Amino acid sequence: MFAEVGLVFDMSMSQHDTGKGHPESAERLNHIKKGLNTSKLIEKLYPIQTSLAGDDWILSVHTPEYLEIVKQSVAKKLKTLPTGDVQLSNESLTVARKAVGGVLNACDAVMNKKVKRAFCALRPPGHHAEPNKGMGFCIFNNVAIAARYLQKKHNLKRILIIDWDVHHGNGTHAAFREDPTVFDFHVHQDPRTIYPGTGFAHEKGVGKGKGFSKHVPLPPGSGDVEVLKVLNNDLAEVREKFKPEFILISAGFDMYKSDPLGGLKVSQEGFVAMTKAVKVMADKYCEGKLISVLEGGYSVKALTEVVPAHVEALF
Image 1 (tube, rainbow, N blue to C red):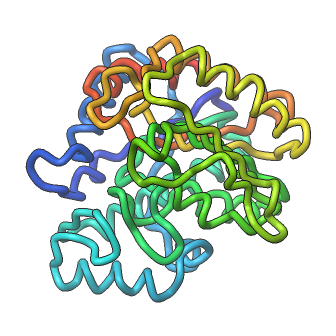
Image 2: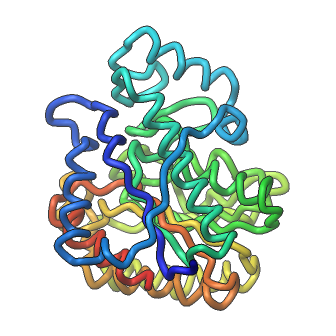
């Protein structure tokens, strides 16, 4: 049965326990669930299950040494990952595998024409996880692994990743900066003013990947006008040149105007306009093939109201 939009949502991902007061907590899923139920959207969405991603897909992006660090850290019941600022609990590895598996199942659902588009409410997020280290609340890079999966399992040649988040998706750029088959496009807050301090405009890829990365950092206080200008102008050049076969959004909602960890001022209406702009692009270039994956976003209002508005705009 064909449905317009699918949803990956699994409350068992709440078992990744980051500790009291941590911004990337299980409460994020609770707020998203509340918002989807209140808006009645949950009744329109095609449910896509999570599953445990195997080592083979994780190793399509991450190094064997790093995967072993994660396994050993959880086995030893460490509270933080040695490679960076990532909280751990007993179920963190299982939940991180489910997050990867969920987005891969969404890829299958789109490619097998069960849905046209999908939103993945996943945690932990992924775009800060580099091939050899986790950081910034991220264990495995969900979107990067999805790009490799689409190439290796579904034989696609050109994947476009659009990363909108107040923080630069350094892990995604690290995975693809030498790769001309995956274009990583980033819009985020000026890295001189915010974590992780990367993502400058001069970073355009290296080697064969030179020209297949683009970073558009924005000064603190930038909002709807500035972000939409980036999508309508800078991204327009990319799509014409690259002609993607599939689009993945690393959707950070910490660009929202009241997010406690960010300094950008995007409104709910801005997120809706951003979503529609990318959806139009997907319809033109890749038969609508589009998956949005949750990254940052720590405002209750953003999670309960803006995320559902983003999902509704995917229809």
